[in-house]
Amino acid sequence: MLGVLAIEAAFMAAVVAGVLVGAHTHEKRSMIVGILCVIFGSIMYASPLTIMGKVIRTKSVEYMPFFLSLVNFLNGLCWTGYALIKFDIYITIPNALGTIFGLIQLILYFYYYKSTPKKGTNVELPTVLTKNTVTSGNVSVTVEK
Image (cartoon, rainbow, N blue to C red; front, side):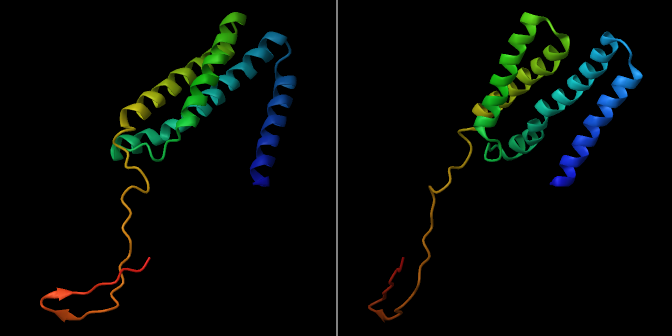
């Protein structure tokens, strides 16, 4: 886990150094960092969509948490609203995509929610045969819990 954190820190340091050395105006620096934010923000919002294929195949939302989809949608909606007030295209694009992706997840969740088997409804208790005497065609069985 520390290796991943170290890679992320090194990537951030490389971006900062590259932008400061390679781009000499505020506009160019903003554009480079903004494009990177659009790319990685869009990937972040799209990552829960990888489970959608499994949800459609199994017709079950067992592996797609509802609150993750809801918060994904609400977060994208709030940031999109803020970005439209400021009219910052680098904030608008990934968060508008996040709003759309979150909405797709919620629609999929509500579509397949009823067909998802509920856990714990069909519990089968183990049976243990302690007596097996046959009298008049009846079998005596004791069930232990």
